Image (cartoon, rainbow, N blue to C red; front, side):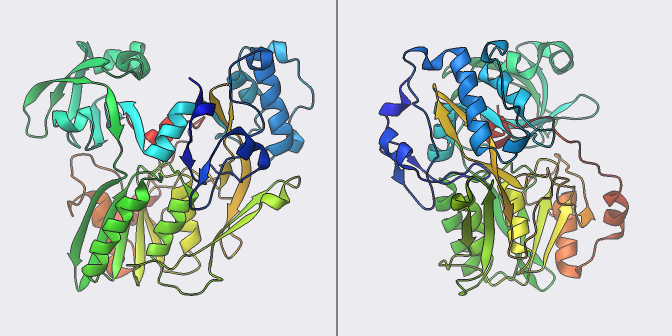
Length: 448
């Protein structure tokens, strides 16, 4: 694979972000769209010793000493032969607060963020506390979508292996196999109707729909726009343009933004989404300020709210969050906070107020934390997450848009009454966020 030979359209990503440099322009013919390009300081080719393991380890170390947000805390000297991979080197060098820096496959990274494509079956699932496994959502244009999988379906076995055995000994990566087109899987699934069906799927290119659901809900005298938004990709702009045209035509006055599974993505899409929800003509209304380390203050950048067609004049925004809500999702909440009445329902978010400059090397992409984000009031650094104003639990037995879904039901109650229901107050202290030990591209892709 020679990504250096490809002409790639890319954009500034959050919390995967970068700025244009002459090195990058010399390295590849990048078409810069919206707000971005990548910061790159070494060749992406695979020839010679530059991609030996010690040299890859050297590259990671030197990059962190220069670009890393906490570069002062990085070990100044290393024996590059002591580490078996650049991933191991990165894990060794990260500071304790950094759960997020990671290394990904470069082609998979580009395909996801610029094309909105992955090679997967196209469904997300949740392992419940009793080791039952339920479908959370599916992408429409995927093997799972074409097979008729739906939210709430239960997986009983995969390739004749019961899910309990997969959980305890086999593992999901092993059972689902490599991300190669045509790789097969057979599943036994219990539908929400109680019927048990056999499903055969083969991995294929999935065109991700980042809008999982949208509808307009009558809530008392209010017209509430309800949007389930799953990730911030370059392809999301076209989806959101259509959605907000529908919301504008319906004259909605409030909104429930459902980010319960949204692991982040593009800062540009975050800026656009927030701008559609805030009717402002002021060019000084700041959505986000990105601050780099003291070596790279020239890379600091301000993102202002944009004036967009079909932007809404909302009285209130209620956001549904969980322990999977991260990064650009949290940026939207934090960025809107100084300007509009915004409430959160569900559980505390991940706590990722920082971002990355993606840098390609040896067919890999390294994403070290390189900046921190702040809103107009200077608020940021929420490493413990953004706490929910009102507690509510996800229940996969309810379809998106069902007003009896506990999370949507509570969000509509808050939207109408501006206070938590009595049950949500009790739940708020009971719902705890379990911190993930690491972050990866899979957290943004979200599906197998």
